[in-house]
Structures are given as structure tokens and as C-alpha cells.
Length: 157
Image (cartoon, rainbow, N blue to C red; front, side, top):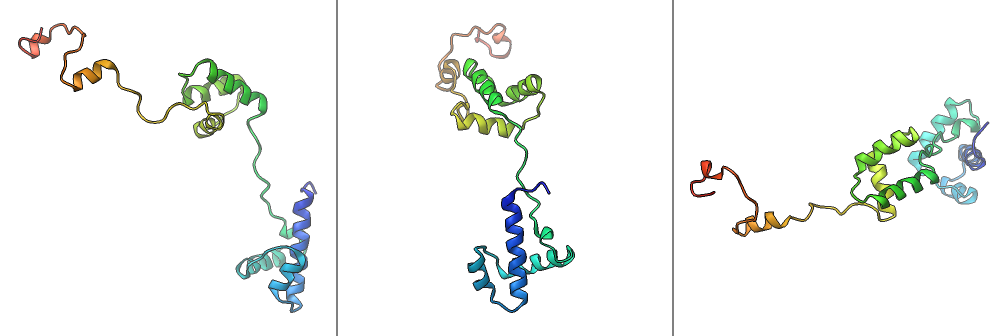
């Protein structure tokens, strides 16, 4: 079996708990003695798994062991350095660059999470307005020359 030792020990303790509860011991007392917390609702689920698995502790092994780590430390350093060199790079550009450089598909959310963790993410919200946009909003005429504006706006140039 290629399970971590902690997972095996937990399954064995759960089997011991189920056997003691079957013999009439109180669930709360057995939980305290064994050092594991099981609710009455979860006890029913464990009993069903135990019975379906032939009353063996192996049936109680929790099948979740996390997920494989895609991003190695050298990939992170490459990503951080790339972002430091060009602050205008966006998440989609970095996702494509990682795919091209390392051949690994990362989600946009994960790349943004990595950048936020080292404070390299872009500023949130809308970008600041340009001077021309602010002048137009104030009703001032900007320095831009608009050819043929007189066609639509008489006297406009």
C-alpha cells in the first residue's frame, strides 16, 4: 500500500472506534480515548463503508490526499522575474507564456493568486483617466485636432 502512514493510522483508529461502539461503548468516550472526533451522523457513514469493505480497516482509508503540485519553485521565480521586468503584463499573457515556456496549463486565477502572494499583481479597478478625458468631462477643449469636425458640428473646426 502506498498510503501515507498518517492515513493508515487514522483508518485503523476508525476501525477500532467502530468495533468498540458495536460492543456497546459510548461514542463520545471512545472518541476521547482514541483521540479522534466523529459525529453520530458521520458514524453511520463510516459503519456503511466498513461493512461494504468486508469489515477491514482498509475500507476506511480516506481517498483524498491533496492534489499534485503543478508550479515548482523555479517556475514561480521565472514568473515573478518576468512580471518584475514588465509590469504591464496581464494574467492571460502570463498564462500563455507559462504554457509556452514550461508546457503546463495554469488557470488565470492561480497565476493571479501567485502574483498577489508576492505583491506583483496589477492595481484593481479602472485605470486612471487620461488628461484629455478629464478635460472633456470638465467641458474644456482638449488639444486634440479633429479633422472634419465641422461636418457634424458646425463651427467645430
